[in-house]
Image (cartoon, rainbow, N blue to C red; front, side, top):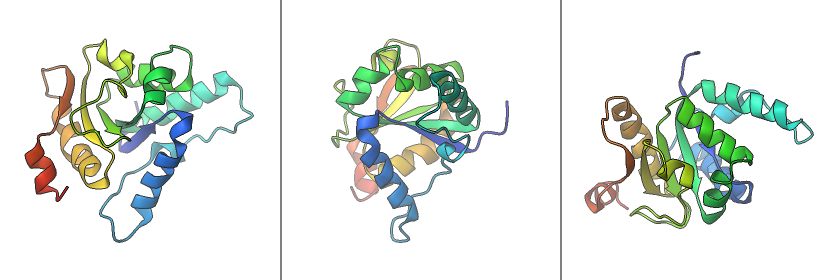
Length: 169
């Protein structure tokens, strides 16, 4: 497998505005938020066949060291339907054993089953849930992925109020 240094952002198509906001955070010099986006690799066009899109998604994810899932009711539905591209992305993330940071668009800090796809909750995969804010997402990307490989625990994890407070949130 190729060198992994990118962050893959997975989301339901209805949440494209939130993904675009993450890109804007990255470009804003006043917000200390950055990630190497795996979506910049192996671009698919809307007219591509589903097999081509899935092949390109897999290639993008081969370069990812971690996943940010934009958590929402739409992501829960599509991520668990077994047929959408989001469901495919989550299946590949589990196959590649990639750490998953679920960034809840509704601002939830305590995890949120309304936003959490069944595919993640029904497996022995370790994921961390955070609110959709640049500081806590960056914190999770910087700290969670490194500990993921050595973690013996599974299931959803959350950061306590102290972590948010220390980040000024």
